[in-house]
Figure: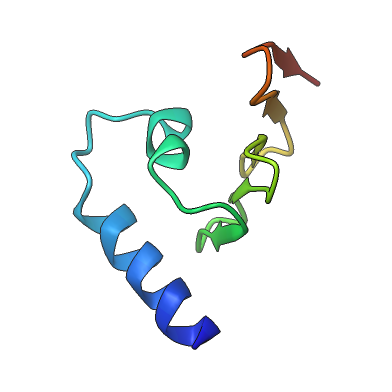
Amino acid sequence: MLFLLLAGATLSLASCSQDQTAMERAEDMPAGTTIKGADGSKIKKQDDGDIKIKDAEGNKVKKDADDGEVKVK
C-alpha cells in the first residue's frame, strides 16, 4: 500500500510542469510523503502539512503549514 502511494506521488511529481518550484510541487503532495532526487535532494511533506526541502548542496527550507512562515537554513 505504501509503495503504491509513493509510486503515485512520484508519478504526479514527475508529471508536474517543470516551471513549478519544489515548494509548489510539495504543496500538491499528500501529507506524509517524501521524495528523494537522484542528486541527493529531498522533498518531504510532514503529517502536519509542514514542508521541508533539502537541495543537493545541503540548503534547507521549511514552510510552516499553520502560518505560512518560511525559514531558510
